[in-house]
Image 1 (cartoon, one colour):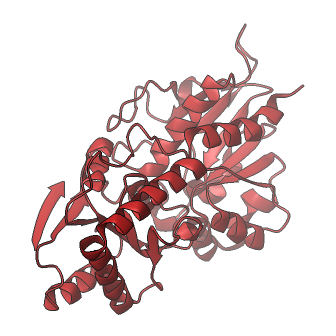
Image 2 (cartoon, rainbow, N blue to C red):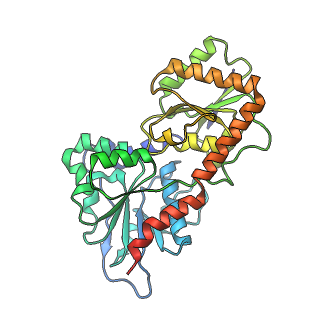
Image 3 (cartoon, helix red, strand yellow):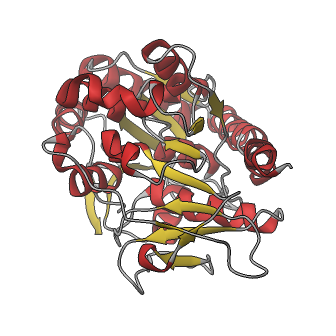
Length: 360
């Protein structure tokens, strides 16, 4: 077994949440936005608040992507960072960006705010329609534990709330249960097939995983496999500190991806791994249940590391002993992801969610 210490996405979303809300200890602060008259000729605009966090984080990348899609669909939109001149540099983009101190919110505009700001969402300007951009319902449950009833106020006592956008069926169910009657809209993430696609040739005997989630479980699963000699002839790659493109390259070169998802809002890594042609084994993180499907993904009961190791061995044997069947499953997984989570589906969902807010 070879373990390559590749630099990956890092702690990503969890780190962003810690940075913004201090693990929900104390009240987080939303950027201050001024309210005034619309400047001459400027159309109504979607102002999407985004944390000043210049490290790989899938949720932030998706916020930039949403703004690009809205602008491309004729709905003016901009990312709003707090610091003047700040923008994310770890992926290529030409996204419209504004500093919060330069934004003048006017009648007809819409403010989009991530769920990570919790009760502070109510500090946004009154009288302006809001969309809570909730990419992880379990973070909202964390806020309920830490802040009590105040955390539910943005969802149930917010006269400006137009909708809560979620990115999985699981998050929709969680928030519908937590906040009955709250208007919830589900959108589908779009997976970029130019970046995430299978390799031209079948991948070799390589297994990849991201240790930023459940590192102890990952270590135990790999130790079990190593002790049984199951990893002989296989390479195991930790994906860490890589750019978006580097992650896709490593996934594309892997036959198997191990998912250690934990209470996810969606679960981009295993989804992107499927799009890159990996067979996926592991925890679905609840939200991933919608794409953890045989024959291309094998879910394991959450926390059962022995079942996890057994499942990995089964899939390894498929790759070794039934290469044609494994290759067909790989192609089926990539096609499933491209059909269900295409940029076209994402665009349709976003336009249908935002366009009604701008109708006279």
